[in-house]
Amino acid sequence: MKRFTRPRSMTDEMVPYCPGCGHGIAIRLIGEAIDELGIQGETIGIAPVGCAVRSWRLYRIDMMQAPHGRGPAVATGLKRALPEKIIFSYQGDGDSAAIGLAELIHAALRCEKITVFMVNNAIYGATGGQMAPTTLIGQYSTSYPEGRDPGLVGYPVKMAELIANVSRNSYSARVAVNNAKNVLSAKKAIVKAFRTQLNKLGFSFVEILSPCPTGWKMTPVESLNWIEKEMIPEYPLGEYSTPKNL
Amino acid sequence: MKGKPLKAVKVSFDPERCKGCGYCSFVCPKHVIGFSENFNSRGFHYAFLNDPEKCIGCGFCALMCPDIAIRIEVINKD
Ligand code: SF4
Ligand code: SF4
Image (cartoon, chains in turn brown, green):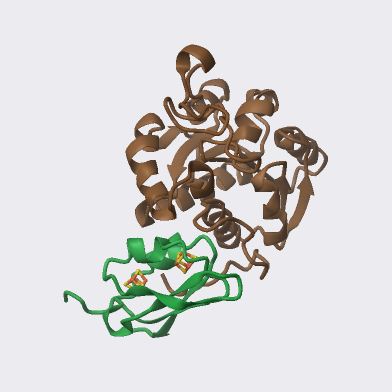
């Protein structure tokens, strides 16, 4: 590491999230990847609904807002109209695994040459910590205070595996931002996802396990430990598919 | 080599951006990050380097900071 400062592709705005929120780390890693690949001028980001929408202020690139869950649909339109641009959608788990699941799966099925980043904090953070499709078995949420009961509401959805299964020649990975080593691997996966798009290989998807101390009712450091002990065993890290010739 | 700096670096914290989450001090292998008793303008106890001599310049703190409050500069490299 030569120097560590704010990425050039990011503005000087204060990060608008709660103390310890992993969105700040994920957004910064995407900014670093944009800098590293030298694609600031070509990249267009999409910020949908949820905590993820506040990312638009932080990037010094063109950003577009999408209705809830419709990031991959808007990204498809942008990419087809402007095939030379690099299009990414920055979404949360409620946005992409619940209301926007159809848009995401179909964009992956069509092998759209776009990139979707899904921040998975196992909860609906922006609306006050309700249960999301990604909430773990037994996990507290404001809508299921006794913990998620699979007999009543089913099991957590595994997005990285799902995308790898439906999309041919895609890049699909799950990473976490709970310690320095995992942050470095997360950055590598983000760069690979952009490369998949730059080389016109296929759909690319990175699921980022990320702390939400406010929603989880934990201190920030407790939430990092919770990712290690509870989330990673349920959501194993790794690459689930890599395109040929990447 | 134990405890020797990896590089001659300067780690600086921006007290106004810090939200006191504690991630930097949690990952710091040398435990050299402390928290001020004072508040910044948003009401957080901000992080600072309380023992700069012991910092090895690994950069873990900056990697983990969600608020991009940490800046690392190489002062001279050799
Ligand atoms: S650079 Fe490494 S040793 Fe220095 S304060 Fe940061 S984490 Fe600690
Ligand atoms: S990680 Fe950043 S925001 Fe959190 S306490 Fe350290 S300097 Fe402050």
